[in-house]
Every structure is written in C-alpha cells, then in structure tokens.
Image (cartoon, rainbow, N blue to C red; front, side, top):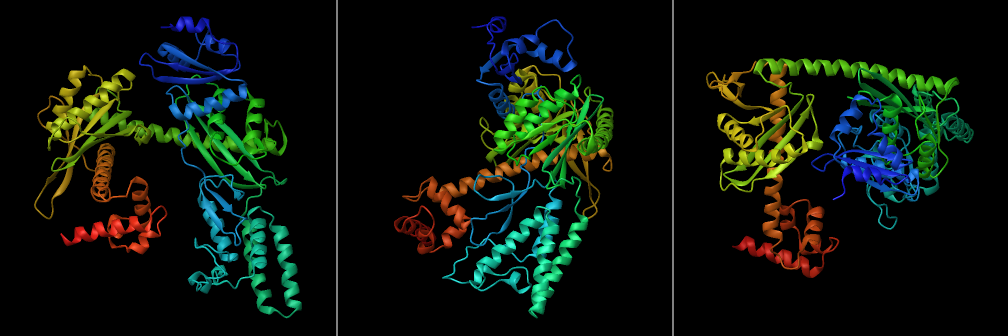
Length: 611
C-alpha cells in the first residue's frame, strides 16, 4: 500500500483536485491547484500556518489526487466534489434552495408568467433571481392586477372552447380558454409585461399614452380609460422601484465583512439597473483564513448553483484565480462575463454598500450567536453537564404495537437544526415492542460509526425516561464511548384532571430523582424543541413505511401491474382509495396503462369488495 509520504513524492505538476482524508478514510478537505505538486506539498512544509490549516494537517492520513487538463476543469470538479462530500474543513454554504425566477414561455400560443425555482434550457425567458421572494410576489401581484394574462394551468384548445372562470369575470384574465381572444393582442400584452419586468417603464408608459390618445381620438372612451388606469398603476410602481445603477446594468455586487473568526457575505442582485434583492451568507468559524480565501471559496460554491449569471460581477477585493472564474462564468452564461474589483466611482460605491450590509448582518449574527451560547451555558449549569452542548444529537423510537419499528436521530448545532445530519433507522434485531432494546441497537449503530469518524456530539438526548437512558448508557459503554453527556427527557403531568399541567423531567446518569425544568425557561424550550423534532422525524418515517406497505400489499398483487404502472396510477389518482373508485375507462387513459391492465385492476378490487 502506498504511504502518504510516497504519494507526496510522486505528485503530478499538472492542474487538478486533491482530496485530503483522515485515519478513517473520510474526506475532510477538497482543494484545487494549478500544480498539484507545489500546492499539496506546501501544506506539509515547516512554515507559519493559520489555525485551521494546522488542525487540518494534523488530521491528514491519506490523500487522493485527480489530474485535469486545465485549471478551469479543476475549478469545476472541485465545486462538484465539495457539494457532494461536504468536507468538514471546507467552507460550506448552507444554501441548498434554488432561487425563485419569473418565467415566460414565449413558444406557447398564449404565454403565461410562471414562478419557478429551477432553470432549464427550454427557450423560455427567465427573470431574477428574486431574493427574498417577497419582492417577486409583490411584482407578480401588480402585474396580475394590471395586465390580464392567463394564470391557470389548463391547455387552450380553439376547437374546444371553455367557459371563462371567475378570474375573467373580475377582469384579471382575458380568457384565452374561451377561444375568442385575439392572439396578436395577447402577445402585445406579453410584450408590455416584459418591458415592465425589465424596468423599461418609461418606454412602456410612452407606448400606452400614445395608444390612449389614439383611442380617445377614435372616441373609444372605455378603451382609453382602461389604458389610463394601467398607466397610473405602472407609474405608481415606477416610483417604488430602486434604480441604483443608472446604466441599467445586470450585476451581482458582492461585499464581505469579518470579525472574531467569523465572516458575512452579502450579494446584491441588480438587474436592468434595479435592485431585485439581496442574499446574506453568514460563514462562522473561519479562524485564520483571509478575506480573499473566504471570498474565493464562497465564489466557487455560489456560482456552482443553477442560476442566471449577469454580465458583471463586482468584488470588494481580488481573488487568486479571477481570470479562471471569468472564463468559467462566461461558459455558464454563454456570453462575456467580467469579474471586476472597482477602485472608484459608482461601482465602488455599490461594493461598499454590499460590504456595509455585510457588516451590519455580521453584528446581528454575532449577537444572536452570543445569545444562543448563553442559553447553552445555562443548560450546562442547570444539568451539571461536562460539555458545553453546542452539538446535540437526539433519538426517538416509533412503532405501533411493535409493528414497523423505526428510530430517528436529529442533530442541532448551536441551537439550530442541521438537517444534513439527520438519520433514520429501521430496527433490525428486536422482535415486537421493546423500546429499550431498540434504543440500544440504534445507539450502537450510530456511534460505532461516529467514533471512527471522530464526530461525537457534546450531548446525546434520549426521548424517554430511566429505561431508555440506561439502555443508551449500556450501549455506549460497550463501545467504550464516554465523551458525550447523556440525558433522558420525558413529559409528565401534575394537578387535577382538567387543570393538569405538563412539565419536562430530565433524567441524568447515576441520579435517582429527575430534574424538573422551569416551563418558562429558554433552556427548557431548547431541549423540548430538540426532542419534539426527533419525535416528528420518527413519526414521519414510520407513517411513510406504513403507507408504503399498505399500497404494496394490494397493487403489487395485481397481474400486469408493475412498479411503473403502480406509480403512474398513484400519481394520476392521488391515493389507493381513488384508484378503487375509478372506472376501467378512467384507468385506461392513464399514461402507460392499457385497457387490459385497467380491466385487471378493476376486476381485482371488485373481487376484494365481494369477499
């Protein structure tokens, strides 16, 4: 087997990606390099390193490299691998959602304006991103009050006209479904909406004023009044719009602020000179990293998302591979993109505005962090814990009379759920209803792996009393794990029936009587919230398995109904009960079904109902 020292001696001088691994073989850091040989060896040289790099190097036991043709290929591969493996020493953006966009499918005969969260190369026109989404809904509401485009999902067929719905009756839709709408007039209205979204309000108002005057001259007073009202709404909206770039550019403006080993990055989305919105990224625990390094890591992950790239990206300071980033973004946009660090003028003012916003957000995050830490310190003191419980893992077992026994584990980091670390377990070794044995099995399965990974929590919280707590302690003792604190949390009632109050009891190892928590305390709210989330996650998984079993027990017994047809039927009808009620003709119309297969389903359920 090749040792780490031998691998360091035989590194390629070409561009590529390197993956650092710990003693358990888990990837703990991913980076890219113009020269793998020079970059990777630099980690192991006896030179001054920041705190985070020192800790990284102490944990490196192995490495893997992937040679690429160009530095650009390395950048793209690095972004993909970080997103896949999420190594603990990389800066990871906690931003998994796709941003909202407005979409016009101009290929449709009667285009509609839709809200989407994914971009496709489908020939449609996309506007955005709108972050936060509140501004987008406000714009969309104004458009729908001003321009009566169709908003429904139905197909319009001229040979099968439909009766217009209530949206037409209240003047919010011109009703293409009726088959009486002039196509050219409709598409002209689509063009007006596009001018409005793109901020070309002056052009739009001038156009509508000309038409209003022409209608008035022809004595079409109702039409002229309609145009007058539309102009008034557009001019009212125009006054509210934030035109902050007089050149009507499409730009992303990025600012950064750092303090005490924490950073915050703000992105301003400017489209057609208008500020559509901004996005805040709080990046904790970047001790020792420069703003350039933080910004560089952020840039790769942020633009690896599926998104519309603007013509210009403005940065507060230079990053090591700016030219490569320009090439990468140009490829994504399929048009020229400039990544610039402005030194003066209006663009510099925009970058400063983004950085000022970042500084303000960072202050708020740090205040919130200190407040959360005070709650954790109070919890540590109240329960006599050895560790400050920054990372809590909570477990719950769920079953109904021993059937489909499952368990959940949820993870909280600094008082917030870390859903990427949630885990679900099917109980394997326990027959019937035995919550204590089930809990012991789950603890063994979870922490035999976590011990190898070196990823033990500060506190393990068990939903239950002494029995569950002791089962957990016995399982941890078998594994030789003593580092985390362990508690059991159980609800209890006191008082007379009708006036009884619920309170929380905490069971501690080796302590006979439980600790009664103050129901108004922030620490009580925290542990109860963690326990309730574990319970919710377990119940959801249990319900899913029950439903899957119920569907499987019936549909899978029907000849000619495989997995594809089963999914198609459930997707079309929505539930097993509705499939039972459907006619053979209805089922035969489902994509993938035949008349014979539909008859088999109908015959099967009729036979069941007669027995």
